[in-house]
Length: 108
Ligand code: HEC
Image (cartoon, rainbow, N blue to C red; front, side):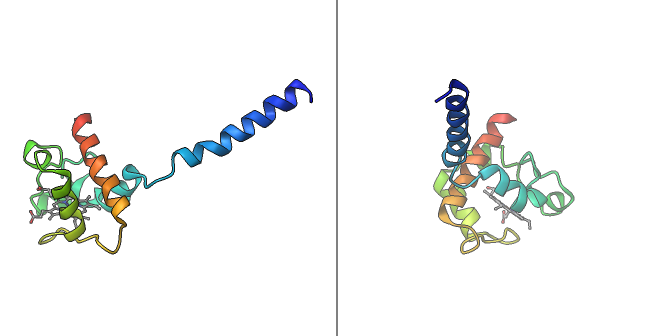
């Protein structure tokens, strides 16, 4: 086999393997699609909707001091105007969202 062919095949295998590593729900994408309308892309809650609903900043200590389980329950069961996502999102997707809310707090 020519050296070029070997390189090309290696590249092909690598590019095919990358999406497999990235498998699992994408918390960032889910958040943008489902949560940002109210909670804002940065989690601040500074959207028209978020201000009307008097949302707490997801990055604030009050929110972040809660356990992963509590944030999971908020998202799964909802409360008041917060929609329940149980049945609409899988547990794995909700876990990815909880992880993303932790990320948002780190970025602040
Ligand atoms: C229609 C607007 C709306 C959307 C969309 C929405 N939320 Fe909420 N969310 C709320 C409201 C309103 C509250 C506050 C409820 C309360 O305090 O009674 C809230 C509260 C929360 C809390 C608790 C924060 C706290 O104050 O302790 C979390 C966590 C949360 N939302 C996560 C999410 C996630 C994750 C998504 C997307 C899957 C999402 N929300 C989508 C309106 C929304």
